[in-house]
Image (cartoon, rainbow over all chains, first blue to last red):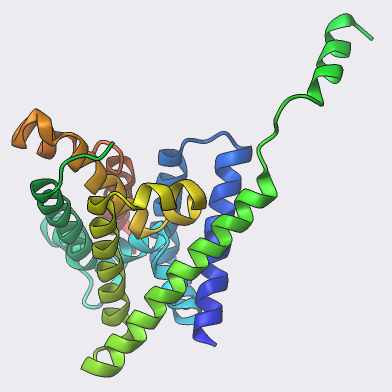
Amino acid sequence: MEYVRAFLAGGLLCALAQLALDRGKWTSADVASVLVILGVLLGFSGVYDRFVAWAGAGATMPLSGFGYFLAKGVMVEPRPDGLVETGAAVFRFAGALFAFIVAGSFFASLICKPKG
Amino acid sequence: MGLKANYLREVKAFQPSPPYAANAIKAFLVGGALCTLAQWLAEWHSRLFAVSPFAAQLWAVTVMSGLAIVLTAAGKYDDFSQFAGAGAMMLMTGLANALASAAIEHRSEGWTAGVAGQMLKAGGATILYGIIVAYVLGLFWP
């Protein structure tokens, strides 16, 4: 049942993003930025916590999930205080993804030549 | 009715309109399938290592990003992305693909100005706006 909910939630988010690309004539960077910002806003307000509890990876895999991880780092107890702690807290969970993707991309470019 | 309006009406039948429904259905199916795979990974990890559901989700998304980087390096992600559209682009795998493909594409320009300088060319907007909004909101959220 979790799989069906993950499929439905992730699929619907992707279909909506596809409609925004086709009908709204947005660029993909626009749609991606809007998704992340939405994820951050909903993550701060606590709505996304419930969405993740319901849909699992269907909520964390779309780019709004990246925004949720960013917001979750700040919202987890104990809450950070001040410029330094907040700046570190933003990367508490999202930094794991960010570091992995940047380092992985670097090593991919180390090994592979561009195709075509 | 003016000549121009007439012309626009007559020519409309010959203009290709993007297949909205077909594209949306493809994005739905592929995006949903990838999320289901990530959910399976998360539950497997959660059961095997007895970690919290949240940590398992983070782990699953990381592994899916790693898969996307490997597929990009092998040159397969592009065909897949062409078919699925937003279903492949608007997930974390799409962000990993954007960074990895930019890094691979610009490697001939050198390791600093090429790979490191251009890596965030396509995916940077997503990451930057996320960080900016999260940091500013984090400072002021009650």
